[in-house]
Image 1 (cartoon, rainbow, N blue to C red):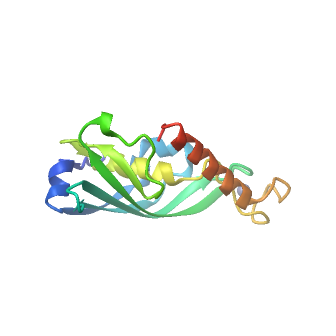
Image 2 (image 1 turned 135 degrees about the vertical axis):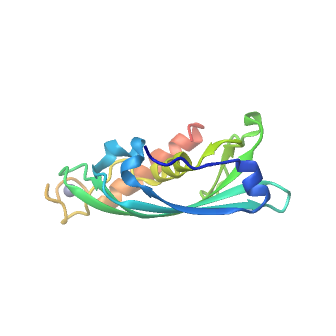
Image 3 (image 1 turned 60 degrees about the horizontal axis):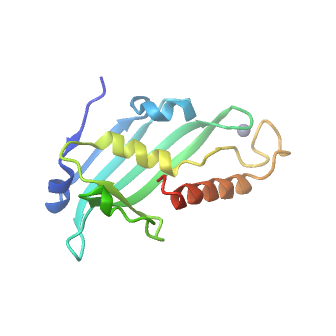
Length: 169
Ligand SMILES: [Zn+2]
């Protein structure tokens, strides 16, 4: 059984607490479909923060390496994770901003007295992944005739932006 890490998110932010740990990739169940191999570790740091107008934030930083599956050749694709997201704690879901800040780094989550830290880490990692990860053109066993990796990256971003605009994220 993976160890569970639970915090009271509002107390954690209010007191400016900080927590870091290591999550085994193999324990992040929702990631598994995207992986070539579940080996590896992700290091995370969660920090509570109080904003100028008394808003409360969690800052979630995750670093490590994932072995994704290339969507072109189905081979292993080393993907460095290095993300840092700021999440505003919102008491009432009705108050969720209809459009998340233009600043991509700020998002909102509902306060939770029993927040599962690893689930949050997994959410953030999932949100940060490209929709269809592939090797760079030329580095892929399937050859370079499938378009450019850059194009894929842009597509992934526009899909994300569309989801955000529709309020799915
Ligand atoms: Zn490939």
